[in-house]
Length: 435
Ligand code: S3P
Image 1 (tube, rainbow, N blue to C red):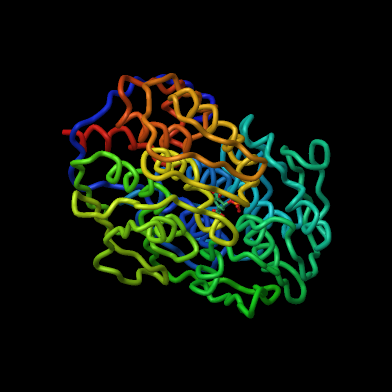
Image 2: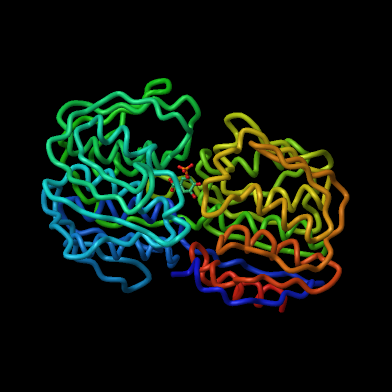
Protein backbone atom coordinates (compact mmCIF):
# COMPACT_ATOMS: atom_id res chain seq x y z
CA UNK A 1 0.00 0.00 0.00
CA UNK A 2 0.93 3.68 0.00
CA UNK A 3 3.27 3.46 2.97
CA UNK A 4 5.52 1.12 1.00
CA UNK A 5 5.22 2.92 -2.35
CA UNK A 6 8.58 4.76 -2.16
CA UNK A 7 8.46 7.25 -5.09
CA UNK A 8 11.16 9.88 -4.49
CA UNK A 9 10.45 13.54 -5.34
CA UNK A 10 12.70 16.57 -5.76
CA UNK A 11 11.31 19.83 -4.40
CA UNK A 12 12.51 23.31 -5.35
CA UNK A 13 12.00 26.41 -3.20
CA UNK A 14 9.16 28.68 -4.40
CA UNK A 15 8.83 32.45 -4.83
CA UNK A 16 5.11 32.46 -5.49
CA UNK A 17 2.20 30.62 -3.89
CA UNK A 18 -1.22 31.97 -4.81
CA UNK A 19 -4.75 30.83 -5.37
CA UNK A 20 -7.60 28.68 -4.11
CA UNK A 21 -6.53 25.53 -2.33
CA UNK A 22 -8.63 22.46 -3.05
CA UNK A 23 -8.61 19.99 -0.16
CA UNK A 24 -9.79 16.41 0.32
CA UNK A 25 -12.82 15.70 2.47
CA UNK A 26 -12.13 15.24 6.17
CA UNK A 27 -10.59 11.82 6.74
CA UNK A 28 -11.86 11.29 10.31
CA UNK A 29 -15.42 12.25 9.40
CA UNK A 30 -15.43 10.19 6.17
CA UNK A 31 -14.46 6.96 7.98
CA UNK A 32 -17.21 7.48 10.55
CA UNK A 33 -19.93 8.35 8.05
CA UNK A 34 -19.18 5.23 5.98
CA UNK A 35 -19.15 2.91 9.00
CA UNK A 36 -22.40 4.26 10.42
CA UNK A 37 -24.09 4.30 7.00
CA UNK A 38 -23.15 0.63 6.51
CA UNK A 39 -24.92 -0.50 9.69
CA UNK A 40 -27.87 1.90 9.44
CA UNK A 41 -31.33 1.30 8.03
CA UNK A 42 -31.75 3.01 4.64
CA UNK A 43 -29.48 4.49 1.99
CA UNK A 44 -26.92 7.24 2.62
CA UNK A 45 -25.15 9.43 0.07
CA UNK A 46 -21.90 10.84 1.47
CA UNK A 47 -20.94 13.89 -0.57
CA UNK A 48 -17.23 14.81 -0.62
CA UNK A 49 -16.04 11.51 0.89
CA UNK A 50 -12.25 11.67 1.28
CA UNK A 51 -10.32 10.26 -1.70
CA UNK A 52 -7.54 9.18 0.66
CA UNK A 53 -6.11 5.65 0.70
CA UNK A 54 -7.09 5.43 4.39
CA UNK A 55 -10.77 6.06 3.66
CA UNK A 56 -10.65 3.69 0.66
CA UNK A 57 -9.44 1.00 3.10
CA UNK A 58 -12.54 1.56 5.25
CA UNK A 59 -14.81 1.17 2.20
CA UNK A 60 -12.98 -1.99 1.17
CA UNK A 61 -13.46 -3.55 4.63
CA UNK A 62 -17.15 -2.59 4.71
CA UNK A 63 -17.67 -4.13 1.25
CA UNK A 64 -16.08 -7.38 2.42
CA UNK A 65 -18.49 -7.38 5.37
CA UNK A 66 -21.44 -7.29 2.98
CA UNK A 67 -22.26 -3.58 2.70
CA UNK A 68 -23.36 -2.48 -0.73
CA UNK A 69 -21.62 0.72 -1.80
CA UNK A 70 -20.74 2.67 -4.92
CA UNK A 71 -18.26 5.49 -5.39
CA UNK A 72 -19.87 7.92 -7.86
CA UNK A 73 -21.08 11.47 -8.36
CA UNK A 74 -18.51 13.11 -6.07
CA UNK A 75 -19.24 10.83 -3.15
CA UNK A 76 -20.18 7.38 -1.94
CA UNK A 77 -23.64 5.82 -1.92
CA UNK A 78 -24.07 3.18 0.80
CA UNK A 79 -27.06 0.91 1.21
CA UNK A 80 -27.12 0.10 4.93
CA UNK A 81 -27.55 -3.51 6.03
CA UNK A 82 -28.92 -2.59 9.47
CA UNK A 83 -27.37 -3.22 12.86
CA UNK A 84 -27.53 -7.02 12.56
CA UNK A 85 -26.96 -7.34 8.81
CA UNK A 86 -23.16 -7.56 8.40
CA UNK A 87 -21.85 -10.87 7.02
CA UNK A 88 -18.58 -12.71 7.72
CA UNK A 89 -15.78 -11.78 5.31
CA UNK A 90 -14.31 -14.58 3.22
CA UNK A 91 -10.87 -13.00 3.58
CA UNK A 92 -8.91 -11.17 6.24
CA UNK A 93 -9.80 -7.45 6.27
CA UNK A 94 -6.99 -5.03 5.35
CA UNK A 95 -6.94 -1.61 7.04
CA UNK A 96 -3.76 -0.71 5.09
CA UNK A 97 -2.07 2.26 6.84
CA UNK A 98 -5.18 3.39 8.70
CA UNK A 99 -5.34 3.36 12.51
CA UNK A 100 -8.86 4.80 12.42
CA UNK A 101 -10.07 1.96 10.16
CA UNK A 102 -8.75 -0.85 12.32
CA UNK A 103 -9.66 0.66 15.71
CA UNK A 104 -13.17 1.81 14.79
CA UNK A 105 -14.01 -1.37 12.88
CA UNK A 106 -12.76 -3.44 15.81
CA UNK A 107 -15.62 -1.91 17.82
CA UNK A 108 -18.13 -2.99 15.16
CA UNK A 109 -16.58 -6.47 14.80
CA UNK A 110 -16.77 -7.00 18.55
CA UNK A 111 -20.55 -6.82 18.18
CA UNK A 112 -20.83 -9.48 15.45
CA UNK A 113 -21.80 -13.10 16.11
CA UNK A 114 -18.95 -14.32 13.86
CA UNK A 115 -15.16 -14.22 13.74
CA UNK A 116 -13.19 -11.69 11.66
CA UNK A 117 -9.47 -11.09 11.24
CA UNK A 118 -8.18 -7.63 10.39
CA UNK A 119 -4.64 -6.53 9.61
CA UNK A 120 -2.76 -3.63 8.01
CA UNK A 121 0.53 -2.62 6.43
CA UNK A 122 3.91 -2.85 8.18
CA UNK A 123 3.43 0.53 9.90
CA UNK A 124 -0.04 -0.34 11.21
CA UNK A 125 1.16 -3.75 12.41
CA UNK A 126 3.61 -1.93 14.71
CA UNK A 127 0.94 0.29 16.35
CA UNK A 128 -0.54 -0.49 19.79
CA UNK A 129 -3.93 -2.20 19.84
CA UNK A 130 -4.06 -3.24 23.51
CA UNK A 131 -5.80 0.08 24.17
CA UNK A 132 -8.88 -1.29 22.35
CA UNK A 133 -8.36 -5.02 23.03
CA UNK A 134 -8.63 -4.65 26.82
CA UNK A 135 -11.92 -2.72 27.00
CA UNK A 136 -13.50 -4.79 24.19
CA UNK A 137 -12.64 -7.93 26.18
CA UNK A 138 -14.24 -6.36 29.24
CA UNK A 139 -17.38 -5.93 27.13
CA UNK A 140 -17.31 -9.64 26.28
CA UNK A 141 -15.46 -9.94 22.94
CA UNK A 142 -12.83 -12.63 22.36
CA UNK A 143 -9.74 -11.15 20.71
CA UNK A 144 -6.33 -12.51 19.83
CA UNK A 145 -3.41 -10.43 18.61
CA UNK A 146 0.32 -10.72 18.02
CA UNK A 147 2.01 -10.31 21.43
CA UNK A 148 -1.51 -9.60 22.71
CA UNK A 149 -1.12 -6.08 21.32
CA UNK A 150 -0.47 -5.91 17.58
CA UNK A 151 -2.42 -6.57 14.36
CA UNK A 152 -3.46 -8.91 12.88
CA UNK A 153 -6.40 -8.98 15.29
CA UNK A 154 -8.87 -11.85 15.30
CA UNK A 155 -12.14 -10.77 16.85
CA UNK A 156 -15.06 -13.01 17.78
CA UNK A 157 -17.91 -10.86 18.95
CA UNK A 158 -21.29 -11.65 20.29
CA UNK A 159 -23.17 -10.85 23.43
CA UNK A 160 -21.53 -7.62 24.58
CA UNK A 161 -22.40 -5.82 27.80
CA UNK A 162 -21.98 -2.10 28.33
CA UNK A 163 -19.10 -0.91 30.54
CA UNK A 164 -17.76 2.32 31.96
CA UNK A 165 -14.18 2.78 30.86
CA UNK A 166 -11.48 5.42 31.26
CA UNK A 167 -8.88 5.01 28.49
CA UNK A 168 -5.27 5.36 29.70
CA UNK A 169 -4.48 7.60 26.70
CA UNK A 170 -6.41 10.50 25.19
CA UNK A 171 -7.65 8.90 21.98
CA UNK A 172 -10.64 9.58 19.77
CA UNK A 173 -10.05 6.21 18.12
CA UNK A 174 -10.38 4.35 21.43
CA UNK A 175 -13.44 6.40 22.45
CA UNK A 176 -15.08 5.82 19.07
CA UNK A 177 -14.29 2.09 19.08
CA UNK A 178 -16.08 1.69 22.42
CA UNK A 179 -19.08 3.86 21.51
CA UNK A 180 -19.51 1.79 18.32
CA UNK A 181 -19.22 -1.47 20.27
CA UNK A 182 -21.76 0.02 22.69
CA UNK A 183 -24.33 0.05 19.86
CA UNK A 184 -24.33 -3.77 20.03
CA UNK A 185 -24.16 -4.12 23.82
CA UNK A 186 -26.75 -4.71 26.47
CA UNK A 187 -26.97 -1.68 28.74
CA UNK A 188 -25.16 1.64 28.52
CA UNK A 189 -21.53 2.13 27.53
CA UNK A 190 -19.70 5.12 28.99
CA UNK A 191 -16.26 6.42 28.05
CA UNK A 192 -14.68 8.79 30.57
CA UNK A 193 -12.59 11.27 28.67
CA UNK A 194 -10.52 13.52 30.95
CA UNK A 195 -8.90 15.18 27.91
CA UNK A 196 -11.46 15.99 25.21
CA UNK A 197 -10.64 14.48 21.80
CA UNK A 198 -12.30 14.97 18.41
CA UNK A 199 -16.04 14.47 18.78
CA UNK A 200 -17.10 13.53 15.23
CA UNK A 201 -18.39 10.11 16.35
CA UNK A 202 -20.66 11.68 18.96
CA UNK A 203 -22.02 14.24 16.48
CA UNK A 204 -22.64 11.62 13.78
CA UNK A 205 -24.23 9.07 16.07
CA UNK A 206 -26.73 11.79 16.92
CA UNK A 207 -27.38 12.40 13.20
CA UNK A 208 -28.10 8.65 12.79
CA UNK A 209 -30.60 8.70 15.68
CA UNK A 210 -28.39 7.23 18.42
CA UNK A 211 -27.58 10.22 20.65
CA UNK A 212 -24.47 10.23 22.82
CA UNK A 213 -25.08 11.88 26.17
CA UNK A 214 -22.14 14.13 27.13
CA UNK A 215 -22.00 14.99 30.84
CA UNK A 216 -18.74 16.35 32.18
CA UNK A 217 -16.05 13.88 31.09
CA UNK A 218 -18.58 11.06 30.39
CA UNK A 219 -19.72 10.08 26.89
CA UNK A 220 -22.60 7.59 27.13
CA UNK A 221 -24.48 5.61 24.52
CA UNK A 222 -27.53 3.43 25.11
CA UNK A 223 -27.20 -0.23 24.11
CA UNK A 224 -28.75 -2.01 21.09
CA UNK A 225 -29.59 1.25 19.30
CA UNK A 226 -30.99 1.13 15.78
CA UNK A 227 -29.42 3.60 13.38
CA UNK A 228 -31.52 5.38 10.78
CA UNK A 229 -29.78 6.92 7.76
CA UNK A 230 -30.15 10.72 7.59
CA UNK A 231 -30.17 10.33 3.77
CA UNK A 232 -27.54 12.76 2.56
CA UNK A 233 -24.38 13.83 4.41
CA UNK A 234 -21.73 16.33 3.38
CA UNK A 235 -18.09 15.98 4.49
CA UNK A 236 -16.27 19.21 5.40
CA UNK A 237 -12.76 19.69 3.91
CA UNK A 238 -10.03 18.33 6.12
CA UNK A 239 -8.56 20.86 8.60
CA UNK A 240 -5.50 18.64 9.03
CA UNK A 241 -4.85 18.90 5.28
CA UNK A 242 -5.46 22.68 5.41
CA UNK A 243 -2.76 22.97 8.10
CA UNK A 244 0.07 22.42 5.59
CA UNK A 245 -1.20 25.24 3.38
CA UNK A 246 -1.75 27.58 6.33
CA UNK A 247 1.88 27.00 7.26
CA UNK A 248 3.09 27.42 3.68
CA UNK A 249 1.03 30.59 3.34
CA UNK A 250 2.67 32.06 6.45
CA UNK A 251 6.21 30.99 5.55
CA UNK A 252 6.30 31.98 1.84
CA UNK A 253 6.36 35.76 2.15
CA UNK A 254 4.28 36.80 -0.84
CA UNK A 255 1.76 33.95 -0.58
CA UNK A 256 -1.97 34.60 -0.90
CA UNK A 257 -4.11 31.53 -0.27
CA UNK A 258 -7.84 30.94 0.17
CA UNK A 259 -8.84 27.59 1.64
CA UNK A 260 -12.59 27.00 1.36
CA UNK A 261 -15.16 24.87 3.24
CA UNK A 262 -12.73 23.71 5.93
CA UNK A 263 -13.99 21.79 8.95
CA UNK A 264 -13.57 24.02 12.02
CA UNK A 265 -14.76 21.65 14.74
CA UNK A 266 -13.16 23.12 17.92
CA UNK A 267 -11.82 19.68 18.89
CA UNK A 268 -9.63 19.82 15.75
CA UNK A 269 -8.43 23.40 15.46
CA UNK A 270 -5.78 23.52 18.19
CA UNK A 271 -3.33 24.79 15.56
CA UNK A 272 -5.39 27.98 15.11
CA UNK A 273 -5.41 28.48 18.90
CA UNK A 274 -1.64 28.01 19.15
CA UNK A 275 -1.08 30.46 16.31
CA UNK A 276 -3.51 33.00 17.79
CA UNK A 277 -1.83 32.81 21.19
CA UNK A 278 1.46 33.62 19.44
CA UNK A 279 -0.02 36.71 17.77
CA UNK A 280 -0.98 35.14 14.42
CA UNK A 281 -4.71 35.34 13.76
CA UNK A 282 -5.67 33.47 10.60
CA UNK A 283 -8.69 35.11 8.99
CA UNK A 284 -11.80 32.89 9.08
CA UNK A 285 -14.77 34.00 6.98
CA UNK A 286 -18.16 32.65 6.01
CA UNK A 287 -18.54 30.45 9.12
CA UNK A 288 -21.53 28.11 8.94
CA UNK A 289 -22.83 24.72 10.08
CA UNK A 290 -22.98 21.83 7.60
CA UNK A 291 -24.42 18.53 8.76
CA UNK A 292 -23.78 19.33 12.41
CA UNK A 293 -20.13 20.36 11.88
CA UNK A 294 -18.88 23.99 11.81
CA UNK A 295 -17.04 24.95 8.61
CA UNK A 296 -15.57 28.15 7.17
CA UNK A 297 -13.08 29.62 4.70
CA UNK A 298 -9.52 30.42 5.76
CA UNK A 299 -7.32 33.12 4.24
CA UNK A 300 -3.61 33.75 4.52
CA UNK A 301 -1.88 36.60 2.74
CA UNK A 302 0.68 39.38 3.21
CA UNK A 303 -1.72 41.12 5.63
CA UNK A 304 -1.92 38.13 8.01
CA UNK A 305 0.12 38.91 11.14
CA UNK A 306 2.92 36.34 11.52
CA UNK A 307 3.66 34.72 14.93
CA UNK A 308 5.52 37.23 17.09
CA UNK A 309 6.21 34.82 19.99
CA UNK A 310 7.10 31.13 20.42
CA UNK A 311 4.36 28.63 19.56
CA UNK A 312 3.32 26.56 22.59
CA UNK A 313 1.41 23.28 22.55
CA UNK A 314 0.77 21.39 25.77
CA UNK A 315 -1.89 19.83 28.02
CA UNK A 316 -5.40 19.41 26.62
CA UNK A 317 -4.54 21.50 23.56
CA UNK A 318 -2.08 18.83 22.38
CA UNK A 319 -4.95 16.40 21.67
CA UNK A 320 -6.60 19.10 19.52
CA UNK A 321 -3.53 19.50 17.33
CA UNK A 322 -1.93 16.06 17.55
CA UNK A 323 -1.77 15.58 13.77
CA UNK A 324 -0.42 19.10 13.23
CA UNK A 325 2.79 18.73 15.29
CA UNK A 326 5.06 17.98 12.29
CA UNK A 327 4.05 21.18 10.51
CA UNK A 328 4.04 23.14 13.80
CA UNK A 329 7.69 22.18 14.31
CA UNK A 330 8.53 23.50 10.84
CA UNK A 331 6.60 26.74 11.50
CA UNK A 332 8.36 27.26 14.83
CA UNK A 333 11.82 26.94 13.31
CA UNK A 334 10.92 29.60 10.75
CA UNK A 335 9.35 32.10 13.19
CA UNK A 336 9.99 32.43 16.95
CA UNK A 337 10.40 28.81 17.97
CA UNK A 338 8.07 26.11 19.24
CA UNK A 339 7.63 24.09 22.39
CA UNK A 340 5.58 20.88 22.25
CA UNK A 341 4.76 18.86 25.40
CA UNK A 342 2.42 15.99 26.39
CA UNK A 343 2.77 14.49 22.91
CA UNK A 344 4.26 11.04 23.60
CA UNK A 345 1.39 9.59 21.49
CA UNK A 346 3.33 10.86 18.47
CA UNK A 347 5.79 8.02 19.00
CA UNK A 348 3.09 5.49 18.03
CA UNK A 349 1.53 7.20 15.01
CA UNK A 350 2.20 6.12 11.39
CA UNK A 351 5.87 6.50 12.41
CA UNK A 352 7.69 7.64 15.55
CA UNK A 353 6.86 11.20 14.52
CA UNK A 354 8.89 12.94 17.22
CA UNK A 355 12.04 11.06 16.19
CA UNK A 356 11.46 11.71 12.48
CA UNK A 357 10.69 15.42 12.94
CA UNK A 358 13.93 15.78 14.88
CA UNK A 359 16.04 13.79 12.40
CA UNK A 360 14.69 15.68 9.40
CA UNK A 361 14.96 19.13 11.02
CA UNK A 362 18.60 18.34 11.81
CA UNK A 363 19.15 17.14 8.22
CA UNK A 364 17.92 20.60 7.12
CA UNK A 365 20.41 22.30 9.45
CA UNK A 366 17.85 23.21 12.13
CA UNK A 367 18.69 22.99 15.82
CA UNK A 368 16.13 21.04 17.91
CA UNK A 369 15.90 19.43 21.36
CA UNK A 370 14.05 16.10 21.59
CA UNK A 371 12.26 14.88 24.74
CA UNK A 372 10.28 11.72 25.46
CA UNK A 373 6.97 13.58 25.09
CA UNK A 374 7.83 16.56 22.93
CA UNK A 375 10.42 18.87 21.47
CA UNK A 376 11.74 22.43 21.50
CA UNK A 377 12.87 24.23 18.38
CA UNK A 378 14.51 27.66 18.74
CA UNK A 379 13.20 30.28 16.29
CA UNK A 380 14.73 32.28 13.47
CA UNK A 381 16.38 29.32 11.76
CA UNK A 382 16.92 28.65 8.07
CA UNK A 383 16.23 25.43 6.23
CA UNK A 384 19.00 23.94 4.13
CA UNK A 385 17.85 21.74 1.22
CA UNK A 386 18.32 18.11 2.31
CA UNK A 387 17.29 14.49 1.85
CA UNK A 388 14.14 13.83 3.89
CA UNK A 389 13.34 10.45 5.35
CA UNK A 390 9.55 10.04 5.48
CA UNK A 391 9.35 6.39 6.64
CA UNK A 392 6.18 6.32 4.52
CA UNK A 393 4.47 8.78 6.90
CA UNK A 394 2.18 11.15 4.97
CA UNK A 395 2.28 13.97 7.50
CA UNK A 396 6.08 13.94 7.68
CA UNK A 397 6.23 14.10 3.85
CA UNK A 398 3.85 17.08 3.69
CA UNK A 399 5.35 19.00 6.64
CA UNK A 400 8.85 18.77 5.15
CA UNK A 401 7.55 19.72 1.71
CA UNK A 402 6.44 22.97 3.37
CA UNK A 403 9.96 23.42 4.82
CA UNK A 404 11.41 22.70 1.35
CA UNK A 405 9.41 25.59 -0.13
CA UNK A 406 11.56 28.09 1.80
CA UNK A 407 14.84 26.12 1.92
CA UNK A 408 18.00 27.45 0.33
CA UNK A 409 18.33 24.66 -2.23
CA UNK A 410 16.54 21.58 -3.49
CA UNK A 411 15.14 18.96 -1.10
CA UNK A 412 14.38 15.33 -1.86
CA UNK A 413 11.63 13.28 -0.23
CA UNK A 414 12.43 9.57 -0.22
CA UNK A 415 8.74 8.70 -0.62
CA UNK A 416 6.30 11.25 -2.01
CA UNK A 417 3.65 8.60 -2.77
CA UNK A 418 2.77 8.27 0.90
CA UNK A 419 0.85 11.58 0.79
CA UNK A 420 -1.95 9.50 -0.80
CA UNK A 421 -2.71 8.12 2.65
CA UNK A 422 -4.59 11.37 3.38
CA UNK A 423 -4.12 13.84 0.48
CA UNK A 424 -3.63 12.21 -2.94
CA UNK A 425 -3.62 15.57 -4.83
CA UNK A 426 -1.17 17.30 -2.51
CA UNK A 427 1.56 17.81 -5.14
CA UNK A 428 -0.94 18.73 -7.87
CA UNK A 429 -2.25 21.46 -5.57
CA UNK A 430 1.33 22.63 -4.98
CA UNK A 431 1.98 22.85 -8.75
CA UNK A 432 -1.23 24.86 -9.25
CA UNK A 433 -0.41 27.31 -6.46
CA UNK A 434 3.17 27.93 -7.54
CA UNK A 435 1.83 28.77 -11.05
C1 S3P B 1 -8.15 10.09 14.64
C2 S3P B 1 -7.73 10.26 15.92
C3 S3P B 1 -6.34 10.59 16.27
C4 S3P B 1 -5.58 11.13 15.07
C5 S3P B 1 -5.79 10.31 13.85
C6 S3P B 1 -7.26 10.26 13.48
C7 S3P B 1 -9.57 9.72 14.42
O1 S3P B 1 -5.71 9.41 16.73
O2 S3P B 1 -4.20 11.20 15.37
O3 S3P B 1 -5.06 10.84 12.75
O4 S3P B 1 -10.04 9.79 13.27
O5 S3P B 1 -10.22 9.35 15.39
P1 S3P B 1 -5.83 8.90 18.27
O6 S3P B 1 -7.24 8.64 18.55
O7 S3P B 1 -5.02 7.65 18.30
O8 S3P B 1 -5.25 10.00 19.08
